[in-house]
Length: 445
Ligand SMILES: C[S@@+](CC[C@H](N)C(=O)[O-])C[C@H]1O[C@@H](n2cnc3c(N)ncnc32)[C@H](O)[C@@H]1O
Image (cartoon, protein in one colour):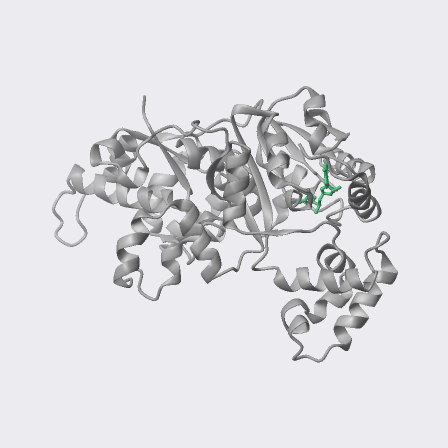
């Protein structure tokens, strides 16, 4: 790969040596978040299911956190993937020490290892990984394709890599501000408290209507040194678009799997009436490649700071029929799992309470990331079909039998419920929840 000039590498190292990222307190745990978004996204089960429609076990898997910083994401990876080994690397020794301390503090010391190492030198570890998380790092490297190639060289054939690039359209204000402060000489040496103060002073001195202030500044930034360092004074920060991402993937011979927040990149959602698009778009969009659809989305609505994606070695997606295209027979012969991140006591308690009180169960409150509006389920059928999933996966046919026992008669006509009706009601619930990966469905072998 293109070797990064030692000067720019040293600047990045110094920056994170002086201010390891993130400054999340040691005690903080993703388990205490008000929802399980972070755990859901960092759970291997999520991208494996998106690519292969298979539910994998995390026990024994080996996970790399490349550019782990102070290790908060390494902790999320450890919490989300029980039994997996976590390996963290970073070029900043100080960050590596903090990451190690964090994982030990949360009881993961035995199944983790951390190294001060460059991404470019990963093969020296002599390890291969089932999953690689390279979060908030790729845009700092001189050539993302070369960075991806290096990560790919230690990814197992069936492994999955998650990484991201800064979106140049969304972050325009910061890139312009970085140039302003570069011209003012604030990034020549390692920026610290003095330079942060100068940024705050300059941004506050600008009139409110000055465009740079209007698009890049918020009053609460004044109190947040890390936000200033990571946005206004970040060394080697670069912005990219969708074509550059797909170009880098092609160069590294990696296959795109999905955006990490895939439900928030839906082009059709940008139109007032997705069922009544202008004729040209209605004809051409269904034929458009995923790359073109994402590019159009970003040009029309660049709301995402990160172009955050999963990818893997080419041709490792199982050519399975999408669940949305399953026939009744496919559903009847399937087995369903609750997403492991939902198999938590507090979710179960809420479901039982909703069923007892006959209130709809808002399943999306626990993992809101894949939805654009809250998702509710009728609590009686949800309790009937989902509660057994806390014990383990279940055949759909067994859930239909359970539902028949709960609802043997039609409430209005008092006629006996037919098996076909019960099956249809169960299928409707499961297919609605599968779209958001709240339940995962696999054909039974
Ligand atoms: C913005 S921080 C992200 C930390 C962490 N991944 C997170 O998202 O919380 C970027 C990290 O990448 C590390 N880094 C930058 N270039 C690197 C390289 N070439 N090899 C290894 N680590 C690198 C930095 O030292 C820093 O800790």
